[in-house]
Length: 285
Image (cartoon, rainbow, N blue to C red):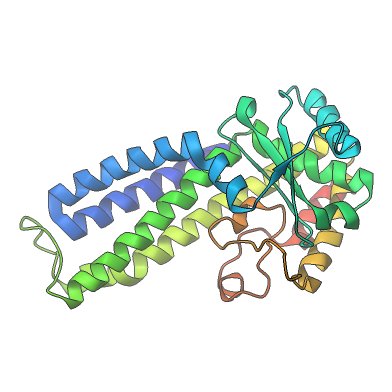
């Protein structure tokens, strides 16, 4: 309950930041446009976020006949969690990872990479997929999609404002602060950074909750702890193959461990809590 309240407040702050940015760019009219943008974003994320992410990673849906072990693990966990059977996907990449997506439990999907299937034992895979189903059960997949989209729009608006300032200023007629230096700094620097920090705070808080919920679903917290240790090492040592599907910075927070260890973004902002802390909490269970 505490984590959900925190997440709700962070989403509200993110939406408020979007409206403030709209106000700074276009005055009252800009604020109203930003508010409508927020409604449209939430609507689009609700209906289409799962399809976009799965297509982005060229995920292939598999049946029980095609992959009986993976399908069987997901079905067993879904029954324990009292969830509808989600669709099961495989992503062809040696990167060891997994994610879940979907607007609600009735429209959910879980995806595992070929890398994670070859790295982990069946019990460790069970621990990972229980974590992902916990995200589905708590509707974290929808929350993270909305947060990522709003943060992206704020960054886009800040970029527009920067160019507008270069080519003649920004701000509506009724926005007295539209052309001052403070407004410019908020738009060009502080707003995108604040949006990313809030988005990542949402992601990190939901990961701890999913670890705990997933451990309860699988009844094997040690299996998830062992899996996280292997995945952390696997992510550090991962070297892409020629045909590997590569992770995107905009969706890195969706994976069970951060897939972007060698990127500049990963060194500045963490999409996940420290794996050592996650393992410590699981072992304490």
